[in-house]
Amino acid sequence: MESRDPIHLDPMIQQLRTHILNLWPCQSLQLNLHPMLALKELYAHSCSPRHVSEEEHRHNLVAPDRILRRQMADSITPFLKTLAKNPPEDLLLVCPGLVYPHDAAGLLQPRNEIALWRLTAQNIPLSSLDDLREAAAGILPRGMRLRTRRTSQPYLVYSQGLEAYCGGWRWIGHCGLLNPMLLIECGFDPVTTEGLALSLDLDRCLALRDKWDEICLRRRS
Image (tube, rainbow, N blue to C red; front, side, top):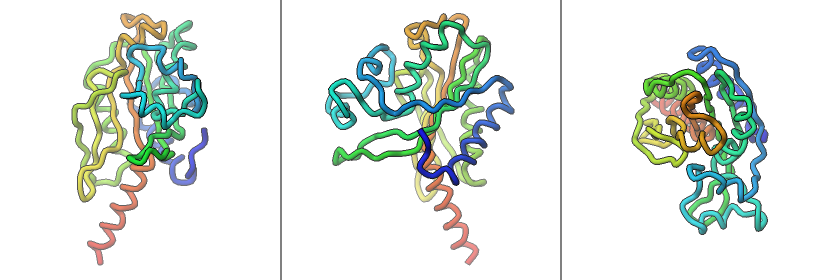
């Protein structure tokens, strides 16, 4: 699914991809996954990124058995089954696209998000999450502070929320190691395949960058 603002977002996507591949020389695959998926696919895994309640589901239903994803992980999880037949030695999945969370009024708010998932036969140390934070910081303006907070994501372990400071702390995404149970249910052997993931709200990152430029301009004035 194409982004709504390719002129500004595509350079950010390529910057993220290049930064991570410089840290981890591996193969990469960019996916354009459809934002609509079968409801049964969303519930196929015990560790899938399911939503908290049926009430939240209701806002994203477009048919009795079809739903619009609320985050990119909703679409990536079914795709993993196609890779399990021939597990990659070391592969970075780059998945940009539109997601459809809803606001307090129940209205869908399309947003640009990117998910980067690495699947590898190598042992992934916990310190690899620092590389993901460094990649996220690289698309933010120089000098903007970035912090992490413990969060809960069903498909991740050691999940960390990412927040940037620009007149207050603003959530921009999360990262963590892939839950071994999710890998098992997708057909992988967690002994020989490990994974980690980074998800970023590109619209929020772009808005923070614009606001930062505005603040810097005011200070110069």
